[in-house]
Length: 358
Image 1 (tube, rainbow, N blue to C red):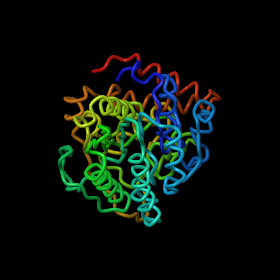
Image 2: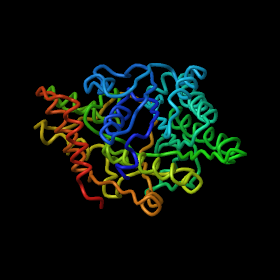
Image 3: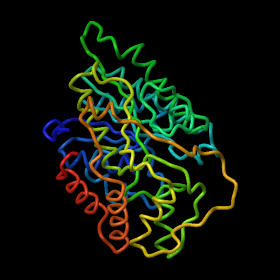
């Protein structure tokens, strides 16, 4: 990823008011990009978008991605070089509660974004952000590869797999053929792991629930302490998106398709281990207790193979799980002590950029 590439690039971000979207906008601003965000209001209270005052440093439009005419008009006026589509209903348990809204946002919303893109006239690269959960989960103890079967047995996972099918259809129908103008849109789907970091207040997510409990001096209640996930810091995840977007812009045909951005094998650890590690600075013992309630099904084993991104993009995560958890805990403890959210994010972005790639 080249800082020079991003300077003055016009970047359209959907879902910019969310946790990952807020970090992404702060990073893009740091790189000198011009950012237009389009999203519903922040999904949580508190929110990183508001605490870090992200709306002060980018162009921000509040709206629903399913409002296709309005979205297309704003995108056309902005004329983006890069589109990063993060807007989604992204919580597994929430999708069980409201599957229709989940499918509508994740599938119809994605079609609306891509329809706006196909109507643009300038060169453009698009990263469609999905999830590690798009694969048909067979409980394998090895990582899923990009050519493994898509599926998803719960509404969230399945809706994101459907969103990938939508992206494939748009590519084959409109975006692959440059046509008389010679314009070719690069479209890729990015599948990342379980993302952690400071400023995440999403309900029913492990780290926000754990931090909330520890800040009260309590143990966190875990639904599935033995479930294994591909944990990674938000900056490693976003670094993958940015690296892919840059490659797509330079060579649209060569970098289209699906891409995994997951951690090293050693960092795919059980929920209980992650909680015990992040609990240490808070001094809470025991770190967790078993939940006795009955919850909808969630996969117990989920791993990603990211060799394609390593080989073809030169991307690798820079933060081990231990470091990612330390950065996350440090962020929350400093913010609770009164430190400014934007300053905390910017200092971690700068520290990340100064790390040597593995």
